[in-house]
Image (cartoon, rainbow, N blue to C red; front, side):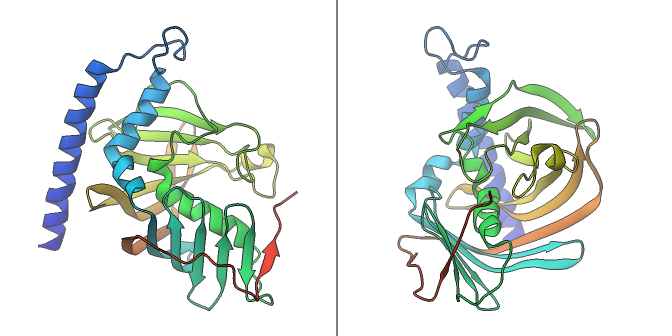
Length: 274
């Protein structure tokens, strides 16, 4: 019964968002020349704004914080297990692992506690997985750069697709890119191909692009958040291919008005990669 209620809620949200989107397109002019001229947004900007609206970014940002439990696995091995708490604008993030480690991002630096803990991927983990969770609400963040929107069909499914890159100096890995695939039937973010340049060159990263598939959406306070992820290999020609190489499940997703991001006294600073 719970699943049926969620399905009904999700369907209602998607229909409502799509109807609103249709109405908004009648009111907002767009240009093919990147919005140069009378100030109207480009087609790619309108694309990103439309996805954010479908997921209900406005309602997401009305909350101060969001938390969720995550169980993340790659190649049959547990990669991460614990609880993330983050500001909805991503300005502060905390991760508390099941084995007693705590990672804090204070908006500038990353800290790991206790100071004798070993976690080689601490900085990557605190910045990456919360971004994947909040990605549908961050498509027009400052520093985002969008390519042209294209219409593609993969495995009998129709998508609007565009490449997302970042201006220099944005985050630890400004050279990362995403190929964002939006389901034309729901206008929800379906999957995003990506490269990881954390600790490696762009050329090396582009030899092994992966993709995150948002397999299921949970509707919380009229906000669509994916709680089941699958990771695949990806190529420009094939799209997603092969069996999943990883998966994640999110539980206990909840919005919090207050949260503590105090850096523990016994924490050590984790430097950014060179």
